[in-house]
Image 1: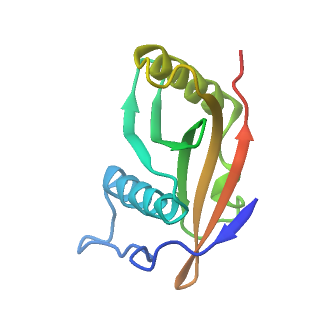
Image 2 (image 1 turned 135 degrees about the horizontal axis):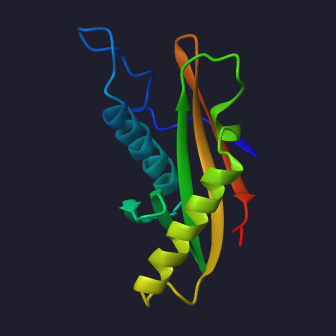
Length: 141
C-alpha cells in the first residue's frame, strides 16, 4: 500500500449550490485525479470508463509489460473505513470479467500481464488522502 498526495489540482470537491454533487461528475473528477497521479509515475492511461454487460473499468493503464486495471473510489468522511478497502468480492469479479473482455477485444493488450489496483481518495477534514493499493486483488474465475 502506498499513501501519497494526489496532484495539486485535485482537492476536496465542493458542493454545488443545491448542496449535492452529481455522482457521475464526482466519479469522473476523482478518476481524472487518479490518472494524473499515475501519469506522474510514468504510467500512462490507455482507456477510461470501459463498460460491458459485467460492469465498468474506471481506468486502464500500462506499465512496461503490465496492463493495469484501476478501480477508483472516493469517500467523504466515513465511519466505514478507507475507500480503497470498499471494493467487494462481487465488484472484483465484475471488474475482472470486464477486464477479460477488454483484453479479448484488443489484440495489442492480450499478451500483457494483468494487475488490478485500487486508488482510493478519502476526505479528511479539509484535505484528501490518497491510497494506492497495487495488486489489490486477482482475477476471480
